[in-house]
Length: 245
Image 1 (cartoon, one colour):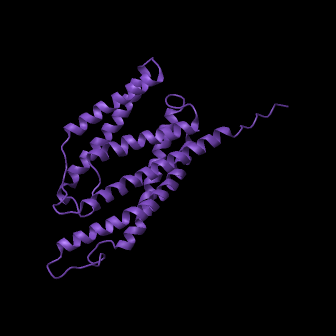
Image 2 (cartoon, helix red, strand yellow):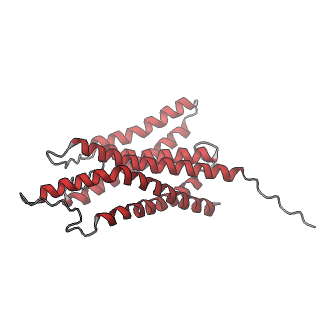
Image 3 (cartoon, helix red, strand yellow):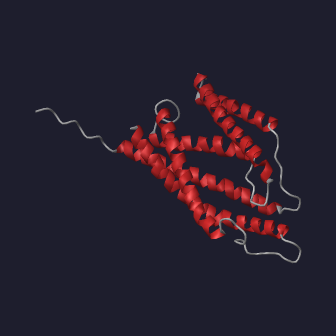
């Protein structure tokens, strides 16, 4: 059964990754182009503005755009495989009893814990924003927030299972248990603000929304597809054993 779930997660993760890639190409790429144009205009000497985005680039923009779908597809494969293994451990233990409901709920929780929690503290920045010398520190801080989100989720699930009252009390306890470590991390971890003065606020906001939207599209598509596939598999009647002669 675990092998079947793993294959299902890999394939549907790939499909969801390509769907997210299409969204990122349509919505995010124009903002990346605008950010690159600003970066090149600021770096070019006065009177020598270069509008060719491929000039001096290690990888040309057309190749980068094609690589976007490769990147989101590989991301979907990796996430789909990990999700399937986690899902196999959750079945019958926590969450909704239906296969599809558990898949969709687990995808929603994963989006909040792994994507939304770190995004609220350290949102994505376009290419023209950020000091290359601080990328290691910023990456570590982002990983810390991901770990905080996962830990908060585990604490919330454990807390809900300890509450013996009705569903509303369990939900309230779970939400409170989730928010305490998350809010504490938001307040205690250092803030990273490297947006240069004069950078268009609208472009920054649109890029961040596109980045978050790409992840939302991926997790919504993957959760719906994985849940549908699990429900469909659960409805297929199993073959009866052949009676001995």
